[in-house]
Amino acid sequence: MDRIHKQSDRTLDEVEHIAVVIGEPGLNQRHTGILYRISDSDPLGFLHLEGHCRLFCEASVKPEFSWVAPRINKLRLVQLAGICDAIASENASNSIPYGLSAPVGVFDNATKRFLLGPTEGGLTCASFVLAVFDNAQLQLVKYSGWPPPDAEDYQWQENVLKHLRDLRSKHPDLVSKEHIDCVQSEVGTSVRYRPEQVAAASAIRERRPVKYRYARALGEQIVNLLRGNPFGSTMQYSAWDRIVRWFDRMRY
Amino acid sequence: MSNLTLDPKEIIREARKLEEQKREEQSLGMRSPRDCYRSASRKNRLLPVYSWEYLGRHDDESQGESEFTSTSTERPDEFDYKNLQIQDQKSYKLSEGIFADYPRPDVNEFSKFLKSMDARVASREMWTQVFAYTDFSAMPTYASILALAATAGEKQLSARQVFAERCRSTLRARGIAEDILECLAEDTSTESTVARYIDAAHMVACLEEQVATDGYLDAAIHFERIDDTRSALACVYRNARHRLRDNQFAELDKDIEKFDIGAAGINTMLAVLTVTAPIKSKLTKRNRLFRQIKAELKKRGLLEKGLLDGLK
Image (cartoon, rainbow over all chains, first blue to last red; front, side, top):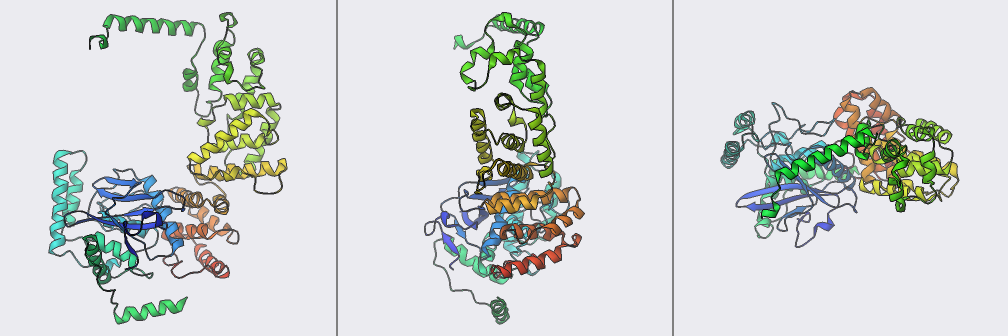
């Protein structure tokens, strides 16, 4: 896949306005975020939700992380970088809780601040990336087609809840009881967007939103790449999607 | 370790000494620059050092060498400090009054403000006073640019040169292209320079104000023209957010109706479409704007695949 790069192959200096960063910092645990700059002369900022109330905009990315150049029109990427800049400046690092809510409409249009409320309990690193793209009117994935959590997803969601409970026992002022209740109600019912699937969705094609099966297929290949295995075969599109792609090419 | 331990008696002695000193200063009518600065309202934090000198030292000739004399190395060349001490209160009030009420961020208001400044500050010496002692850091950046505009004909004034450099570094620190202060046009007459400074002050105000500023889309167009895309986007996004926050949908609709598509760069156009997309149902003029932008991009040969996806 020509859009997915290891830092050893292509340095971050080659990032054009936006890159989706993907890495595997722990065993079977991936992390994602957005690398952005509005102008080529600006320094890069790595905007990512590292954990509960841990939103960071950092100047560097771990060297073992890979990056994906989104298959999106370059001028729209400039706009997305502008929105990243607004979100980074308007949200304090402790403003976004970790949770399993849907990434749609989570930032206030008037302030670009995260909207806490009964429906917006919190985000994961992957749903944060989706929410930022969504805010720039660049919906990455087809939310309606995403399957409910499988056994592995359910286990992961349980682990998130356990982690939040542990955090509350140590720092009661950091995690509220309401937040624990909210996440508990989402376990098993909320869709899980995996970091590699989100990174894959940004790389797949110019026409969005990306269907689950393509995001999953390329996501698996990205995991292989992160683990040092060779990249698999190219993406196989369905007959219908091949027709749609052909029409797309004819339109312009 | 023992010599790090403070003797409580000594602390009490020192505290009493400081209190006495403070009482003595108050009885003499002396105020520290910090006191003077703090006691002033935010808008009136003008000439804190000057007013300190004026209020505290001015009438105390008997003390011998004043604070002014001891800091003589920092004085601008053309300024007669002895004269300052003798100057009547009128001069102080004049300097204080200049920025007491800075204008609403609007090009016409800025022009009127410059005229009132011209009427108040007539001499180069007065301007040197203003540059040296006005606390511009407590004011919006556009006030500094207006001070530059008012002295556009006094480019050789050394205090102004220093002040202009300080303005540039303020803009740099805020990530705003300092090119907005440069003369790009061939016409370098004083009138055109003043007009340019007024435009620059308005552009900066559009980024700084906490409420939507009229003409922010024109400011964004200018920013993009000087290749400051970051400020162009910030200008559109911030002001549109202020409009949404204050429920000014009708005003936002008027903004997009007046938007000069022919003059705008592609980034500004896309920013306007992006920021208004979530509330398109409330903006009656947006559909027309989308069509016009699409036609303009086609005309310019910039309409690429996926460029307007999700923005209709």
